[in-house]
View (cartoon, rainbow, N blue to C red):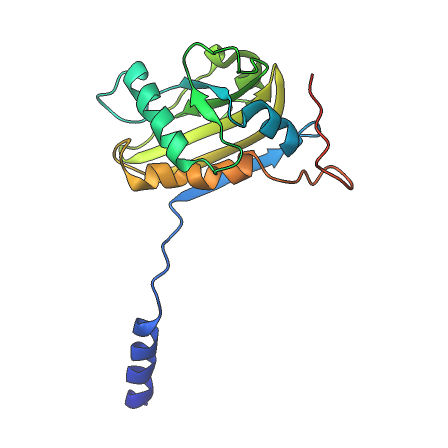
Length: 191
């Protein structure tokens, strides 16, 4: 029995260590009008507006956080579509109808639709130090296209867990297929 236990312990210690997922993502889903091709057309090689509310890390202004967050999003995004995330003024190559809205420390009863229709009305609630919670929505004008809430433990904007949260969040917000559609999901609808 002792040999079996030692053998099992040695065998388990030889297995590669898998990294734990840095984020917990909940309340995710897409709405009927969502098509990945529409997101790709609006984002690929173009500036893509990000509206940000809240700062999860003490000692940072909203402006400093927004600037650092854009760098995090650029490193976390998939290679395609090659969105150029920005909170600043949009150039002529941006489609102002589309945006990603991120609310850090959102109130429990913050409706996803509110983020698309009036993010300035967003309410917040305290989050424990070292914890980050973000409510994320992909919007076309005032229409909700997709949504999710993500949580992770991170102590600063440079914490690898913070970037990993967005690496895991992007495929949830911008899935290749919409399960609400039958057949071909490559059809894009632009309004």
